[in-house]
Image (cartoon, rainbow, N blue to C red; front, side, top):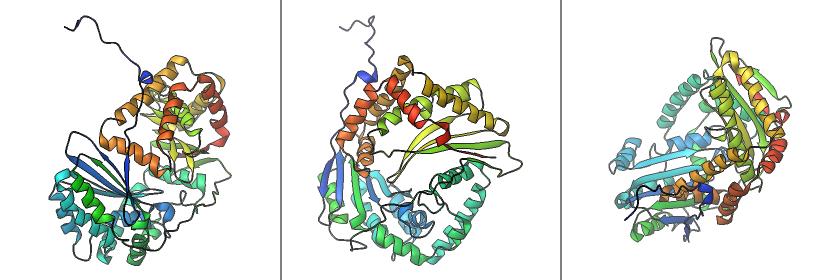
Length: 428
């Protein structure tokens, strides 16, 4: 009988062995790679079709996100109401989104209903209509949202910091103006959809608890013919980065505002660089989680903000380190002073072993949580696969998180936390 007067032994996350459940792959007849994991206690399924159809690939501003927004707006045989009813009848969720690099079409539903929904999913991918009246309604709503957002300092800061980093003509630096929305045409949307939402530009990720028959139905639905554009897919591989030579910017967006948005950013190596996981640890200590140095100083000690974070943004063609917060207008400049103090402190002094151990356990504990459940496991694999990485990258990152030293963090801070390398923007 267990002696309950003796507490169980406590283990740090750093002491655990980490193993990422294998991901299976099928190459369909039309050469679509289909990645699948069959696991979990609940009979639910996630089907995600991923396309190189993000902002990087659009020929005209606002096209990529408009196509994503209107993909469910109708086909040649069903209008938007009928499509939504066909999905909601089964209690399913279908979301479409586009970011800088990718477009995602993701279905969540009970496994037993998946085959019934597949024809609707296939229809919106191969027969999307993009009717003129749907586009006009979208334009009205988009213009209203843009007008509201342009009064928000954080929105203005986000779009301007990207333009400063990359240049307004770069795919990652451009942003949408009202004129771009007004200029959209159904022909642009249909052409982009046909060329980019195509079998030869698609990867499929399936995870959850489902039958072999369900997986075969997905293969039969999407993996047999070369739907949409049948020509070889081509895209630009590079774009010139033309960041601003000036580094310090102050924008007055609203004279009556009592709050300002602060953004500080610089270029860093991409995710495929061996230094990236080391930078991830350094950034976590600096500003990457709620217990970070930026948070302890600027939120807890100074009380300038409710939250401040530093993030590593990894795109296919670039990497960015971004520090962001919103603070009272009267303390924005002092907030930046404190950020620079924390930069200098990390450059000049070693991170204490106990602080680093806390961060290691935080990072590794987060990964442990992500290894529980098929959806989160597949998300790990999706991040690897879409960045042309594999299980060796995962294992390497775990090794880095466990073994990185205070000395190495100081070296990284000296290389990447120079204040002169950062663009500095305040919007009030």
